[in-house]
Amino acid sequence: MALLSLRDVHVRFNTAAGTVHAVNGVSVDLAVGETLGLVGESGCGKSTLGKAILKLVPVASGAIVVDGTDIAPLRGAALAEMRRKVQMIFQDPYGSLNPRSTVGRSVAQPLVLAGWTPQAVAERVDTLLGWVGLPADARQRYPHEFSGGQRQRIGIARALALSPRLIVCDEPVSALDVSVRAQVINLLEDLKGQFGVSYLFISHDLSVVEHIADRVAVMYLGTLVELGGRDQIWRNPQHPYTRALLAAAPVANPKLARTRQRTVLQGELPSPLDPPSGCPFHSRCTLAQDRCRAERPLLRPVSSGAMAACHLA
Image (cartoon, rainbow, N blue to C red; front, side):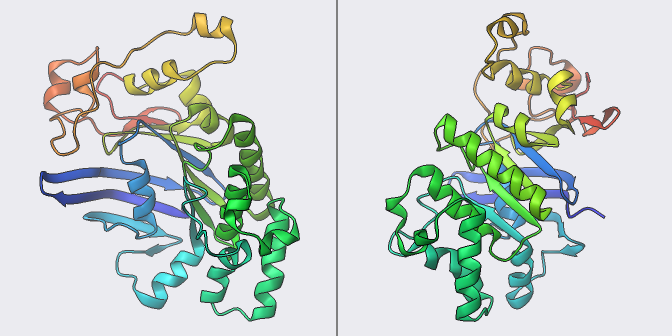
């Protein structure tokens, strides 16, 4: 049984300009101990989907099942219990911390809400700070006294407080320097191996996703357009959008960069207020045919372990 199962999930927001189709029929599973990378351009719905998994935004239709339980009807104590299993690491390591609370108080907050005794809370906070590589005296200090990488370690410690089974990582290293990113990614991998936690790793940085993910889901305009193992996606992408993303990603080796096929995205990302008919990518795809404009492709198997939503795959 999958730890996380999404089935035809839709998230919509009503605005003065109309209805925003933020997530438009996403179905995917995440296994125990797996890291699933979720990639795509800004505005494609990645973060909205992550928040929907924690019921931070409402789902218009579809099902989100966590550890065998549909989260839709959960309220009160049942919802709190679900959130012990699923935590989130936010993109902004400073904005996600209360600047007026000490680090110890911020990390302790989920433990206090869960009813832990003061002594147990104090011991757990010291343990958590040690796990993420921060000194014990960090608990008495305030967020502004730490670097960006250290603040993200504080966020990771808080997310681990209640021993969750799944952590939604929403662009957790995008605000950090390159050298610090590597440290935080290595920390997340070490913690995964130590505690068996699963990650939904949301990012627009494909080099980071290539390093940490077991499988990769590619999202475009609220829909999944490709899903497969990390190596499958990088070596043999099936969807034109995936190929364009990989072609635009920086490559450290200049020789490899010269030999890599360039696929340039045409035009702007369509508005989720008025998504295109047929394939959502057809308005920017150089390979689009009449069928692409009229018929929406389904996410279907195209090779062993790989799926793509493309008529031409």
